[in-house]
Length: 360
Image (cartoon, rainbow, N blue to C red; front, side, top):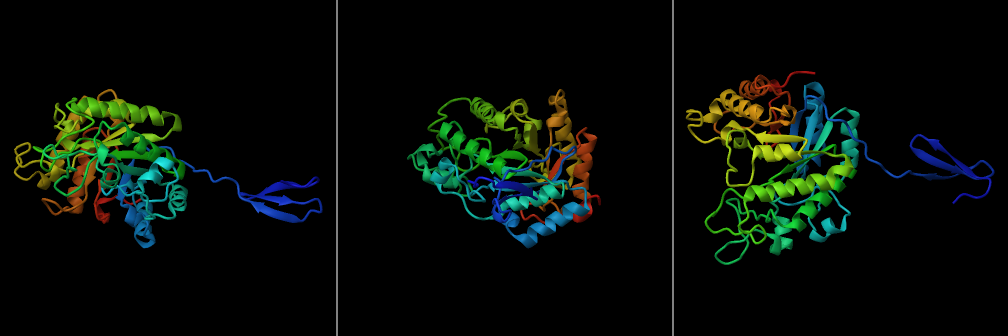
């Protein structure tokens, strides 16, 4: 409180109080408030792990790459496959699980720096693949049908039951806190049932025998409704073959269901992830243009009323073929030729092929 005859004025972003004699008495910082950027058109993004985002040298190199090329957005892990949250959180529900770390201790400042450079910031949240949550709340986890112990996929990772409402609330709380930190868009990954591991010995205590697509649809609707008032942009990652398959791939994902609830849908059309002889191609990874073009042509036909919602992930990593600049660019060209404008580049080690990118 200020004494009678005192006052205050603004100096930059600080509020400076002065007493009746005119002397400066105190500097009062205003409450911090996140800024947000509008979604650019098109979006051309790079993926960044939380560890890289917390390493100044590595992240600065990627930001410099964005500044000298066509890249105008980054996707940063908020919660990855481990279930760890990349920065400290305050929401009691989030705190109760104990999954937050200080991988990106200066997350606010980093996002502000990206915004100052005009770089759009997307936060990625792994939803149902979450070993830390499953360890803290095994009653919400997918289990082995044979003995009720935690079920694990072929990488040894535990999953949460997609129908568990407390899991939904946890990820919604994380989304709200992340938006308040400054992320412009929230990208939800692993929004599905498990797909690999011992699928003959798996049970879902909360989903039971419900149709998987209905469970995922219910989650999408609940998530979108809960976050609508925040104004945050929402996107979801789907298997690449959701563009070509009409069934749910036994994981609960159908393209039209995602399109109904999210601002953007990101099919992961990595050519290396398609089975041998897809389109009659012995090694789909070696012919990225054909695979991506075919997949996205199908997506365009199915999203004919909202094609602007399709923003695919494409491949910049070696698997099945040596991904040269030519092969990376071939995917970009397939995106454009299919009628879309945006893409996101995935490389798990965050080392990107600069020659595949147009200079600014």
